[in-house]
Length: 139
Image 1: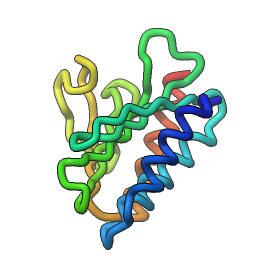
Image 2 (image 1 turned 120 degrees about the vertical axis):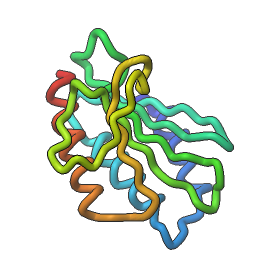
Image 3 (image 1 turned 60 degrees about the vertical axis):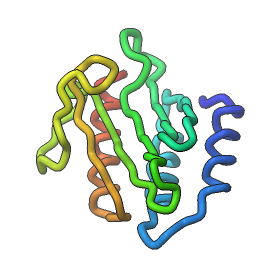
C-alpha cells in the first residue's frame, strides 16, 4: 500500500497540471491508477520541477531493486509535458519494438524507455501490459 503522503504529493502535482490537447495528464493518471491498483505494489514520487516528476513502482517481493517501472513526466516545458516510461531491460519484452533500449540508462542497468508526447489509447494499453509483465517478474 502506498503511503498517503506520496499519494498526496502526486495529487497536488496533478491538480496543478493544466491538461492540454496532448492529453498527457490523462495518460499519466491512467498509468498511475493502474499501478496503484496492483496487489503488492507501492508507489514513490520524486518531484524535480523544471526537470521531471517521477512516479516509481516497486513490488513488495523485490529485494535487489527499488523499482520495476519509472513513469516520468518530463517538465522541460510545462505547456508541452511528455511521458517517458522506463523498465529494466531484463524485466519486460517489447514484442512490438516500441521502446528504445538505453544501455546503462536505468540506474546503471540496461533499460527500455517508451516515450509518449500525445495520448494514444493503444500505447497506454501496451504500457499497461508491460507493467503486468514487469510486476510479475518483480514478484
